[in-house]
Amino acid sequence: MKNENQKLKIIPLGGAGSVTKNMFVYESEKDIVVVDCGMGFPDESMLGVDLVIPDISYLLERRKKVRGIVITHGHEDHMGALPYILPQLNVPVFGTRLTMGLIEVKLKEHQLLKKVRLQTVNMDQQLQLGDFHLSFFAVCHSIQDAMGIILKTPVGIIVHAADYKFDWTPVDGQTFEVEKLAILKKQGGIKVLLSDCLRIEKEGYTLSEKAIGEAFDRETEKASGRVMITTFSSNISRIQQAAEVAAKHHRYLVLVGRSVEQNVEVARKLGYLRFPAGILVKVDQIKGVAPQKLMLIVAGSQGQSGSAMVRIANRDHRFVRITEGDTVIFASDPIPGYSDGVYNLIDRLSDQGANVIYSEITDDVHVSGHASKQELALMLGLTKPEYLIPIGGLLRHQKHLALLAQEMGMPKDHAFILKEGDAVELGPNWAAKVAEKVSVSDVMVDGTGIGDVGEIVLRDRQVLAEEGIFVVIINLDKKTGKLVHPPDIISRGFVFMKESEDLIARSQKIVEQVIAEHSQKQAEKGFIRRKIIDGLERFLYGQTERRPMVLPVIIEL
Ligand SMILES: [Zn+2]
Image (cartoon, rainbow, N blue to C red):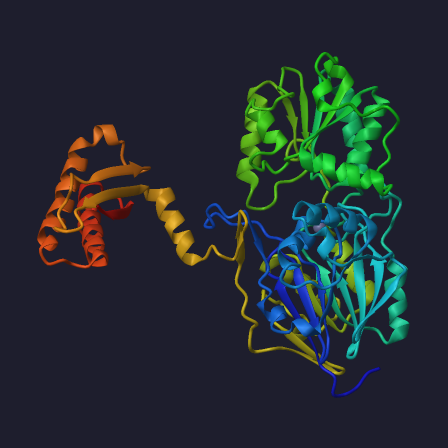
């Protein structure tokens, strides 16, 4: 299959130098295969933006070459952008059963289910997508049915190992299929390994998911009131363990929050979750049930606004109120960058009398889904790749995985630290970073709009959020160009109007002056607007040292 003239490109459109928004392009002469299609979370500068998706301009320009998108697992940052990407690029999507079940729920919400091509694969299946021959290996992660991909390409074998860890006592019994990687040495060896690197800073091994069940058991044993557990709602193994602990302690299980209910429904339907009979009670039925008879699984472990956990903390939930003696377990760590919201939530719950257990207090109520340093070393030793591309981590994580590979004997220039839009080109006997980047930008989704919020809209939102708005409504006589009555001023987020009568009156004067100066000249409206903005901005800054957004509205009567 190898041919000296063959070339292949690997391009991360997202998920390199960043943790979320994963999307990787494998491109040969004739074909493209995409791995993952994740969403990202907006940073603080992206006011009001719901989520961020990868920029697929590169793929749209080559849409005829794209053979499909393979999804490694059912986490949002690996498949959450599908509802936004598929309408633009409707190619087949491949994934395992649980992954596909979760994707179907998302696509259904967006009324896309009938329009897309979904194909479920199992771990032992093989796929030929143009130049690429794909096979899969099971990996352990904080969601079941996660997989890595072995791509046999015209330039050699590439292993794509997105989020993973090695868990030899997994709750669902599915261990990492190391044998499928070990055998590749006999087939000519692995040319490139793309590997998770997020937890490289932690020495040793990540704990087994099983440790969580023991922690739930211990905390439930101690609890005198209700037990509420909040975790990522896609962590089915954790919900399974909670259910078993509930049964052991003769508690009913209550699902609180839409994402938990939806994911549990999919996982039960597909057989990934088995509840002891009669254990489930609906949240609207818990009134009157003794507190020590209840365990609640609550959505919103990251303090997402509007989530069940946040509504409970705000005393705004229809059926659940915190009372003295409740135990709340945060079986999750805050996503980097979101910890303030989570700690604030913990404070508010504690304030209402809950005994809150979180990972700073007890280190076994959450275990990571990512491999620690010794596991990453195991992966490198197992695969012995010629080249390495660390993925799914920040720059420092990428660097440290590259260093680890060097310690294990890889030449320094065989590890590529990539950012979004960087490309690596490979031939059968060489690999090099491409000088020219693929142009990518964050595509922001706000409500139903995709990509229509850009720099200018964000800058306006920034001003509105920090300085407020100052609106002047000007009614002009169509014939004379004179004011019909004094200008109306409305302001929000700038000054308290009732105590700023003087400021408002003087602002009105400034507007009147501008109009008077220009009414005879029949000046153009845009010009008058600009003059009013300039005059008011200068005046308001002089008075308050603030720069609200000044917005004149001219109406001709
Ligand atoms: Zn993941």
